[in-house]
Image (cartoon, rainbow, N blue to C red; front, side, top):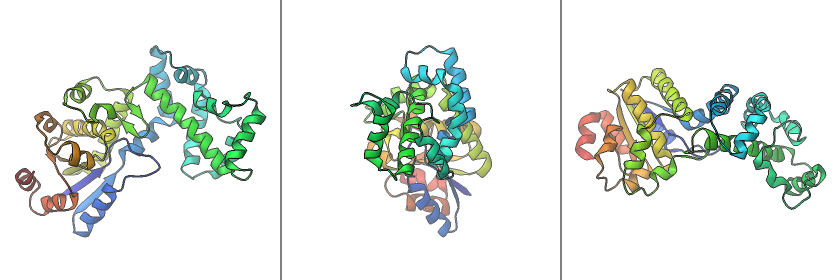
Length: 298
């Protein structure tokens, strides 16, 4: 057997959620073939790439929206395509030399998120530069560049939310569908609706992960409401790809919101829900028999 553990989108991109790493290490220590992936980070990497922005632009051209973020993106789309991969590389720490070009304020297209820099001043380049110097100091080039690059990424996230998928945010995906939801209907309706570009990219990533690792068991950790929609979208894709894969759902959201579960439709997407500590439940289910053990105990 092989266990694949995934953190669905979205979590904080600069703070990887540790559950799958700990559980993968525990299972390997006990002789179980376990691997992990992070579709949240990979999804953002697909979207914030030259290819991803080209696909976003193509979809936006056919749509109608009054969002300032979308309008600015369409007017500066070539500049975004030319800079996005360099900016992501810089934020990943792969190209720190780009900081000087970023802080020059001549490299990045500056959309609505940058307007905050001119608040409280007349908006001249000198005054804005002085305000950033006050915040970061004359030697804080790297930090200043990271701040500006983050505003750039936030602008792109706004474009995706306003023009492609209203559920999308950098640290959560479809959170309102699951946060203290009294019933399953809104989430179920969203999962049955036509997939957005973000959904299609997530399905593509899921296919790649399943083909690469060939798991017999898929574990999805859902620590927050903002992971539920992504987790069920992944599960939905896996059911179509290979229905024989056993899908387990666990994590903080399951431990709180699903402790008194009465909605059977969730089991159209996942096979089992594990409560509390995942170490013993996942480990024992492998040593004994995943189907028999979990069906008796959960």
